[in-house]
Image 1 (cartoon, rainbow, N blue to C red):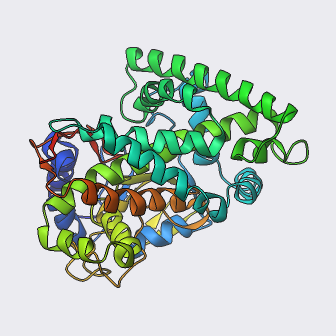
Image 2: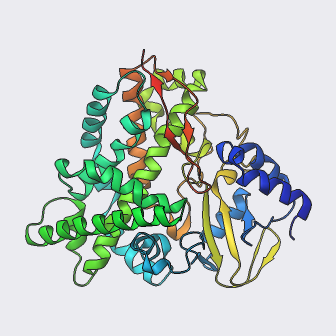
Image 3: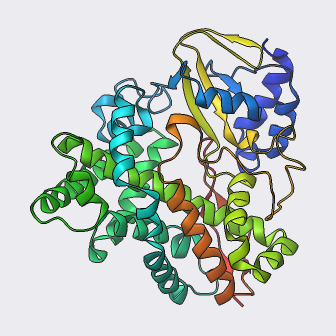
Length: 399
């Protein structure tokens, strides 16, 4: 059944407000208590409970929404920035998705990600050396770290990596805003990213190395096509840096707000690293919602859903569901209840999850060893987004 319209409308108005985007968790608590599925202003059904979200993400009757650009850009295929998102793994369903996922999974293995640990440690150390008191933690650490790591993974030369920071930020801005100005910058960035990665792919065809780009082009011609190689590499940049950047920013704020938990991690940095990062991802998830579409009629939490219905899967709410997690609003770095939906679930589970986790496991202990007195120098500025939760700026003091 659908929820009581008046109650749901009040909560949904709060959810999409600036205050709700800055801190959605009080609204999530009330949405989780509603008996049915509320309907958002865009017509989609909002799914908040963990069990329902998990079922929808794993259901073969549910596919990706075809509303690239949030449905605000009907001619999205004419925009290079949106076309990259809409024609890659993030916007595809089986059988095309199945083929691409199988090929890329064979090239981008957990073992390849784990092999980047020394490189991650080196970049972390270098960035911490350059971090100054009063600096912005996002631009000085949380943003350049994953860009450098993904560049290392793909084989982008260190000298070529700095421009990718602005290009990636300009491109992914269309996930939040699709004004003509933002679209123009995003399209220009997408074209430049594709051009660079296309040249890199051509170079690796001629002179392969041990990087992921070499592994991707090695699947040709029976695996990925040349355009698919470039699209896949570009999406790795976008998905990889957004998740890891916001894990680091959100995680720092969460840890500084729970000094007992931070002291606990400091006392056993290696033993707690895996569960601590998983808990940070659950507690304040970088990706808050996933947009889906019913391919066939199904039932979600007792509510019939017609084919073609749009679904807004609220990962942030699911990860605070008291029916799944004991005392969900408390940060517990040793939490035994794993299985958050921070990286999604099912066939679209985030391919880069092992790499993002590894970056957090290496970065946080190193940060607190180097700067044990680190503190916030202000409230920071949140990114204005329903989909991605993170900081645009986060000023810190180091001593």
